[in-house]
Length: 148
Length: 148
Picture 1 (cartoon, each protein chain N blue to C red):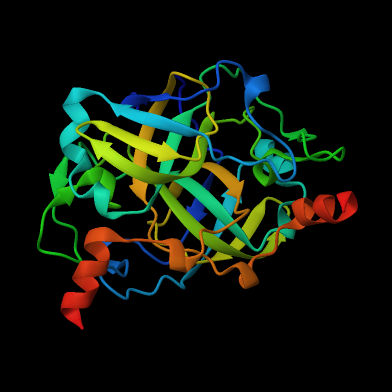
Picture 2: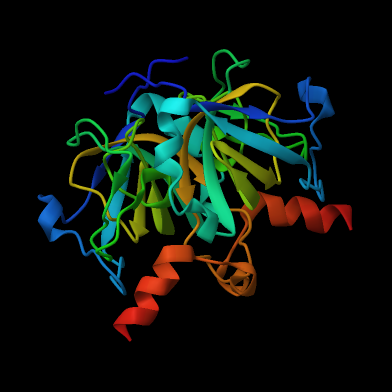
């Protein structure tokens, strides 16, 4: 295995978990900044060309995990690997953000859903999408249908 | 931070890196199996409802990292965070796979691009796509255009 290291930290408007929009139809259009540590800035070369990025980050204020639990959008319990729960065996978060602009080691982005000061593990270019018509979304689609 | 632990291992047809399709237009439709360790199987509850999953895994046969390097699809060097290079500060891979079926702790999937026996860190449901018309793909789109 490997020893995770922060390549930088995320500036977001969210100081507490309760402030992060959750649930069905929650909009994640908050803006934030991915601030890379100076020693990793060179790794951003040409990232400006991509409109969207994957950000891998650490749920650093979460401890332990639950294999089954009810997410905020549903009252039914689901397996942790079928949800985005922070209480995971490896507490890694994944968020797709829209890249607005870059200033040296800082990426200004839209779509953050992490707490202020969250450590960043990795940034990857978003290269292709699964077409919406090919997606099935299991319990999430069912929960949405029930709320309509 | 946290100590990464394998939640399972991936069975793929690829024994060597050279066997994995790379480059522009490379098709990743190989089938494989995500085999979870028995103690994590309960976390798969309701995963069957999703057509696609994110798999987070470890580049366990890669050592060290390069901040800038030329990917197989281009002769121009790009920053590691603008590519999918295995030589990353945190050697975590991310692959979207199509879920074909589940048998207990085994997920049969299409779209694997990892080496046989790769450790799995996490599985997350793929809930939504960025519409193709909203994507910009930087150096990758340029490299594709040059090859046409």
